[in-house]
Image (cartoon, rainbow, N blue to C red):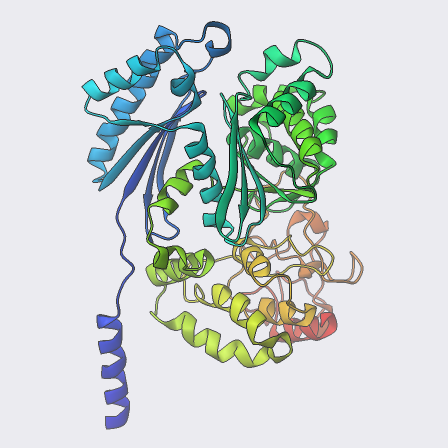
Length: 501
């Protein structure tokens, strides 16, 4: 008894004195050609979460291509927006505010007037050069995808920035006046006009092309285009970060999006209505740029200029932290019932993965284990062999971080090890889902679908509820007399795992 009490006291002392990640609220006010946006970040410095996000469609660059100026009405909208944002930051006790302006203010003949009027309100606006904007977007991609190696393209309202990233550094950058607000005038000159303009601008800027590299998409218009493609392909997750498309897909989307009604586009989950008018031009530019760069594939990044500005300010030791581990640990520690529980789960589950090798197991298991003590349901890792990217949020990041080296048996074991955390990850779909399946026929293993509802029944994508066939109880998973919180009895789970492995 005394030894047990001493161990309890030691554990309590360790938890009381263990260091917590330093956090401070930081805000970025991004003054763009199309919108003015405030994003307030909180949480770990390496990968902070978004506490507040609001934008105002000021339209500073609406008339830039025609008059070269910011008209008075858009300027007033922009100034009112940043003034309100400053008050919001004060109420939210933001420790540091960084206010940056990009192409519209940079290229407008009266951009200096906007900066001066903002200064009179007490806000210092930092005017970014094209090179600084390209570096910021590239650093944002590196923040969210540390191993990224390719070309970053950041499409805004007034400009397009390209940056070559390799080995965690930015090597080459250019900024071109090819924002979505400028494209209609170029495309109005006839077929092929945009292609000729892009080619001429890239040659004049001295861009050195490197074929067969991935192209990382940054910017709201390209992310909206990716969401449209996710809807077309019935992609089962609402996670756009690291969504991939083939290079040839860009040209197909150019043709498809021009024939889709606005009502259909507005029905897409998370599709901003302000982005819909820009989709045809964004798709056309993407198709041209991909051809000029001869890219191998397209990868979407949810991290861009704003996250890059934060990442640039970090010391090297914090930059070196793995973003997935930091975010998983922060989530687990903030909401878990028992601190340090994720580390214990990791040590306990490690012997299950001897065939994966130490490097693979070390890279992929911890992110899935760290949030395991969170009381609320969380998604679990359950990709199929034929669709490795179709997994839940943490699982998807775990798979990519491991380099895809997990074997199929290991993925099933890890999925089966998390039965008490079902989550309705497919609840946003309005039609039957296209979740990956581990094998077998559609009628045989319906409950392998991880998109279970709150009452633990399979989602409607399976048509009918599954029969708990392994234990032969002739009941559905909803009515299984011996069911656990996973939706079926332990016999069913064990038989399912052994059959699939």
